[in-house]
Image (cartoon, rainbow, N blue to C red):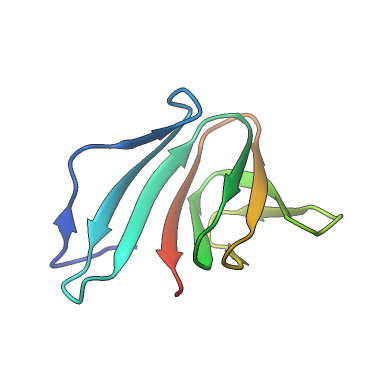
Length: 104
């Protein structure tokens, strides 16, 4: 994935004691996108608006809030999370990289 004509926020977003790191970019149209890396571990995220998570490198296991089963995702795959919801993500072995697009 490549984004042109964006504004990048230099300060990183750090979560879970720096084990999840993302940077925010804004497209020319004002759309917010985050690009990040998740180090091995299990983390839970809440959503305010819907999100599409595109996995760009590595792999992860995801359980959406309210769903019993988990799903594995790897590079080139994506999943969506409804707004006002959340998900748990587990990364084993090597870091997982992603692009988060906000849907609402």
